[in-house]
Length: 77
Image 1 (cartoon, rainbow, N blue to C red):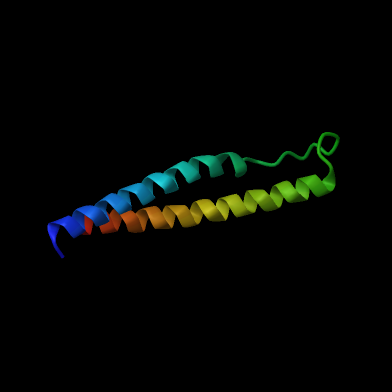
Image 2: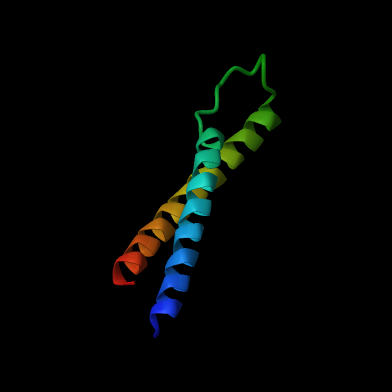
């Protein structure tokens, strides 16, 4: 690979890392604890919130794995 190819690859990895970090910040709000107050939130709404919380946690876990892979790739570049 040429230096130009490596610089381009590094730029793409940095952009991807930046995008993942911004998404992770958004997911932090979705993975907050779901309250048990049924007077304020109905049972089905709470179930939806629990499902959204689980999906946000899994998305965060996958983002962390991808960020680790990006960090490794940047070290190799």
